[in-house]
Length: 259
Image 1: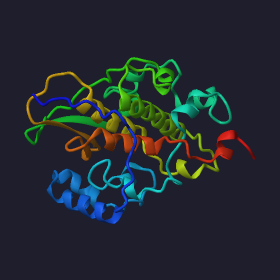
Image 2: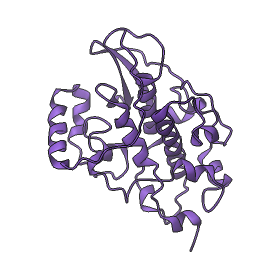
Image 3: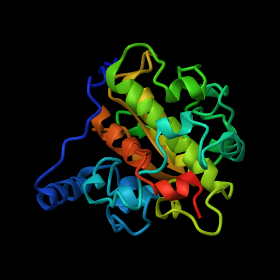
């Protein structure tokens, strides 16, 4: 059985001082990953702003050194726990999620906001024919998750609460929350399906206690295309992705509802 490695105790993302060299190495790696992922290596890193293709070259963490924080870093977990400015209960209503909604009712392969996505198990390089059904193991409410109320596991709290905020951001924007004058990070923001799919890959790899065959990985597909693979991903890669999507660097004026 493939062992489930514990998450690192810190979700901080180190700054790479040799970005160009790092990126060359990572793109070179794309030549040996599954063919379904190679299409991602050919996409310009910032071509789609904060969409998943804008972040990814071959795997989630590989092009984060090139993303523009001015165009990403949407509302944070701390922002969503408040009831001020633009982030009020009305924003929650527009996102279609209540503060009391269980986290695992949205972060699930059977949820309404994951209708375009599929998680598939891969054993010894061979994907299962059937989709893999999975619900997050966390039944805490969104409000509790955003506040970090989880069993005492360091970076798990950070990754999970930022995933919750990223989903709220994505749904808020999808349902028209940006209005006619959206903040820059709201333009081409990652989709709800991608937030859910990437988080489920993280949890399946690092948290799920279900025994799996040896050499098991998971992939996230959308529209029959492999979007991401858990192979070779560390929890720091997931932390980098979700923190960059929900780090609270959006316009304070827009958030406060100022003219």
